[in-house]
Length: 392
Ligand code: CMC
Image 1 (cartoon, helix red, strand yellow):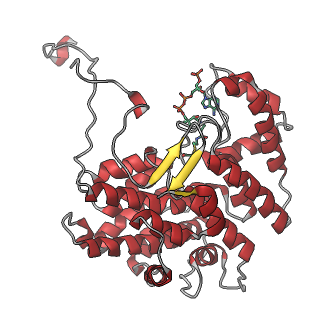
Image 2 (tube, helix red, strand yellow):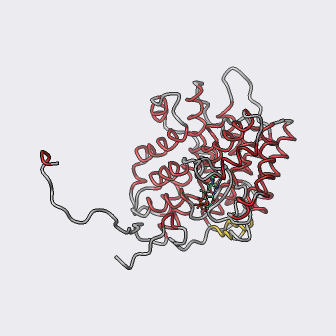
Image 3 (spheres, rainbow, N blue to C red):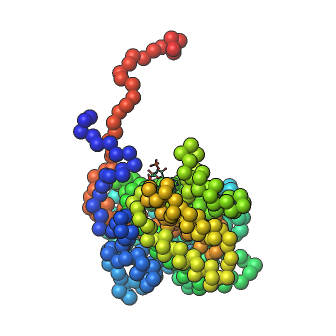
């Protein structure tokens, strides 16, 4: 119909009103519920930011303690979930395992399928998923490397508990490095929400059919998996490794990225909304230096990344198209310094984005938004008669 405006990729289409995250792509501003990402990264903690995103305001001491305790008490998962996990071949990508385990929660908590549940019951689902996602993530990794799973340790904070489930072995003492736990917490804060990106829009659109929170989040995890979205952090490290193996010839790879006949893109560069800089990339670049220094890690790939950034920021191709390093350009380098393997990078992104997805899902349902259903412009065949198979 002539009334339909075509906007592939929804570049200019607002799908919703939202009071959660403010983003100004021209000025490079990102705020969660009014608080700047710079201030939150410096002063807050991931669970506090999660509360802020989901419930709209910073919690007082008692509220935060209740929220934290609630999460701590639900970190264990049903033993039968372990059987589902064990059914996956060890070479399964942990993102596929993660989304499957999240979907499985619909079976363990069938009451979560009821779209007319009370706000209290929804809060319970929220606590459960915040508590269990780190357990799923660490267990997906353990399954991959063929080690026994480590049960959650409720005496630890959110990130330390995750690190222990990832890295502890039954045969050795495991010491948590506070520098690692703090760096992880900051990375999760930086990824916690980013308004209507691909995975968040997926969560909202799935939830708009009144599908359950767990079903909606699982869809979001799958959307995040793609290399143009959350999968970019894995792709960046793979790219930097390739450049290193190629003798560090950044010039050659820049030319590949600019060549329109070559599908290669400079991973970790460019953003749909940020056209001057990505404020998260600034914080992460500095954090990468700090963390590597504190841990005494020397990673030649960091120098390649910095060199690439320097060349790209001067190159007319990147300048004209407003292409700057995004959040994923340096995050992988930090994850690697923390000992997190490459195939787990996008899982780390999912752990960080979880509160944002939850907040957006909750907002959409509370606002009673209509079912998401884009239109199209049909360009196929006009009406034609059916030809019998022996006449084709
Ligand atoms: N390398 C080379 N050229 C690029 C790149 C890149 N990374 N990004 C964009 N371009 C070019 C693109 O070819 C196009 O050129 P032309 O106008 O000549 O056709 C122009 O810049 C505009 O790009 P676009 O694809 O129309 O922009 P978009 O808004 O649709 O895509 C993007 C945004 C992030 C998908 C894209 O920049 C990209 O593919 N980047 C690499 C992947 C990446 O780092 N993704 C992580 C995004 S941030 C984390 C997250 O939220 O997921």
